[in-house]
Length: 306
Image 1 (cartoon, one colour):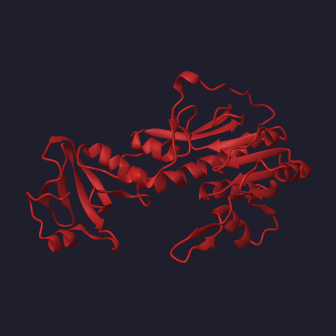
Image 2: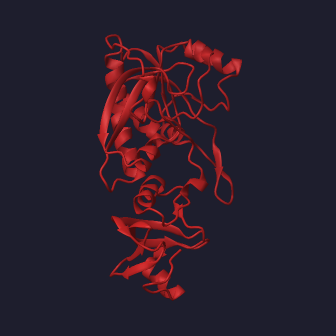
């Protein structure tokens, strides 16, 4: 398959790992399709997607396309003129229209074990659900959302303290391996239909998803694992919990009350279970040690942290 022409469609670092592995294995990448540059920060300076940045920083001559939509006839014509043998898609951020699906086999590397977690946030969803393992699926794309036939699977174990960035990294490596395996065996693979009775979906992560309370310690901790870095988890007061650990899952406590102050953390009770908190971030301030925070607020054991 290495003498075949590939169009690569992907945007974040997950996609970059796959793109880099293809190049390392001497696959011919005829074009990169990625999302438009986005304004970031207070100055709203345009920042390129991770895949584009990789191409530019490595001085590669790969043509880069950043259409706001793939439905434009000019875009379809461009891909048609490239005449790829296969289109590899990884966290691209747009649904491929039928006109492009018809041009070449389109293979998507989706970060879940399909049919579980079709949609935009499969990595976060696996952590929210406290799954013990997840994985990557290589899938022959159709017009549905992550509904195509399965070409291959690769499993990844999730440890109890795994957070989203770590899982992202493991799944990126797994996806890169699976991409090569799929391409090398594409002519021999027997496609497998997805079991429709096992389908589940997950949506795009929004800032509101990070809001937590002290109802259930396991739920709070899993949200922390899933949303660490963005959108983070935060209380009604807008205080972000930047670093925490599950203390226990089953004790009965008064919600949000500080039950212990230890060397480098505090223990906060939940209706079910309790959480150890080591670092917080008040609104519009930098992250800080939780002990400094409670000293400033003059909070002690028995006081409400929420």
